Length: 417
Image (tube, rainbow, N blue to C red):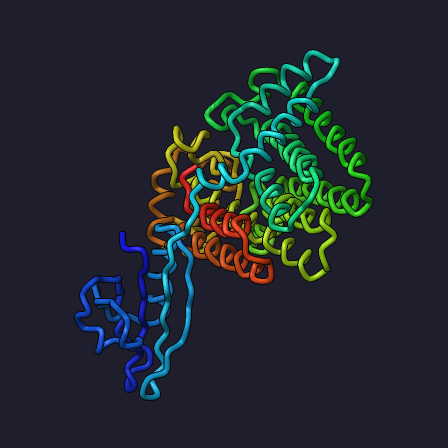
């Protein structure tokens, strides 16, 4: 694939709702460059020209960026009083392997600390704790803590403790979630409650919560305690709100976003905000890092809710349609119900939410999602969150760690598990 793409939107003077859209890639030839609204030194040729309204143009470019994993730069060009919108596509310079290499020493220290802190004189805590912390998770939240802290130029090892705390809080929520949801599969392995039982899972989850608070005290920063205690409380509220929404087809889009902020985005937000706190950054920079984490976490959960209907169970590591089987009104399901073309389709989804019996109708419901564009709509919402996350980093000084944060934002939606 060429290294750079231009997407050009040039409206007709007589029909501003229609335009020529050219998808342009670099070429060693100088053919046709005089016909394009770029500097004469541009070395580009058009590879595809389409006629479409501006809304379709934005969807086209958003889909390309999502699938190709790159960074968009949009600018305006005024030629003969005709405004031309141009989007420059730049591929990401980092992939996940490069990010892991960048953070290898830090993440090794974090993993060692996690193993040390999960240790207990109670054998069952050791057994279940070891099982859950070594269950093949992405370690995305501690990775974010490390990257954000390095982007803030941290000069000590407090970010290792912060990363381990964030992972313990996250792991505790997973243990409790799997009991509440009666889940049997996570990350391609049996859940802890399926092996050790519900009581043990809940109690070890409690142990991880309390251990994380012991570690917070060690940082000797009241602001850290303040943010993490509030975040943990809001996570619990998010889980309760999700329970209240369950089996309720009257769930609104706002209530849905309130749930995913509490249950997912709030911990992302704390992980990145605290990097600024640990390094005593000014309020503006702390707010920027907080916003980055919030929008990234929201995009991540939106992508998760898409995968519940569009992924492969073996690759995703959990059963497809789990949310449907539990009657959870996630955005793809709600949008399909709202936009269904007939009453029968809408009634089917409503019953699936109310009765938690939709799994037997999974194929038909997926078909309704296709017809209504429910997954595309949810992807658009996720793309907007990614764009806001990246915009939040505009005041962060350039560094490989900032580049990695930008790359992770794109990866949060361009994934299959």
